[in-house]
Amino acid sequence: MPADVFTAPLKKPSHVGDDWLEPKQTVYDSEDDAIWDDLFKRQMEMLPGRAATAFMEGTEKLDLGRGGVPEFGKLSEELDKLTGWSVVPVPMLIPDHVFFWHLANRRFPAGNFIRTRETFDYIQEPDVFHDVFGHVPMLTDPVYADYMQEYGKAGWKAMRYNRLKALGSLYWYTVEFGLIEEKPGDIRAYGAGILSGPTEVVYSVEAESPNRIMLNVDRVMRTDYVISDLQPTYFVIPSFEDLYRQTVERDFDKLYKSLGPGFTYANTAVIDVDYVVNRGTLEYTLRGGRGSGAKPV
Ligand SMILES: [Fe+2]
Image 1 (cartoon, protein in one colour):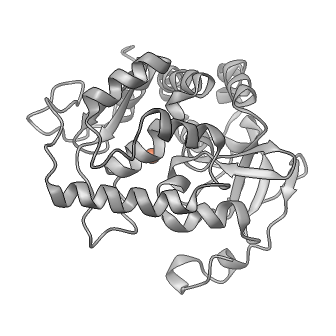
Image 2: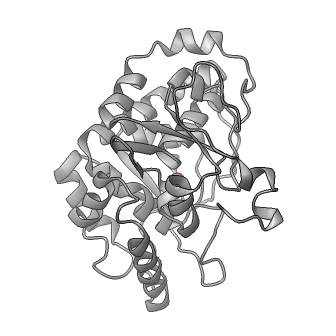
């Protein structure tokens, strides 16, 4: 890593090295495996017709429903044959510069723990279900797999320009909460934040509240986002090729020089340059969102 990159002083657990990788994956017991199976079953009931085709095909190619928490060694072997990626265990959220370095080397860091029954519906810290079920199926798509690697490669540049917030916003609105229009009028979810939980799968593609706007990388990198509630706005791509091109063919030096340190647009905003697919009512957000008990309509 270049010497001029600032790295946040996160406290590293003593048993992991500079790569933050666990020496080996947790051995899960039968209750952990049952939690995985129940989460898997619930999501698979909701996803047909709502999740991107590439995601559904990825779950089959990797046989994620074979029962229990997947073993990373075997999963990586299968993923390697498809796109050259692997899945590696990490103890917790890891520092940005290490995360970018793993992605740039086609390694996806995944949580080395699973949620409990008490936190079955929602957990803030990404666990193995969010990371593996949510993210890994998309890595079987060759173009998406390349996008993720390019994202990792872009990370250190963003750190040098002190524009990590902007790059983080791109991750948020694509990798975590992205939608794709597979055919005219047929909008599906490919973001892991959507696909690993029960509520947003339906809300993101069917509810009237949220705005759905075609993705424009410059615009998205200037847009704020909310981490603990359903999104008021989703950004839609026409294809993974388009997402790859919009990102890889961009002059990020020029972009970072033109960006302010904060966000320009609120996450509810619709602006002149937007190509709007659906303008949302914002009813859920305006009623107060999650804390208010508003219905995700
Ligand atoms: Fe995630």
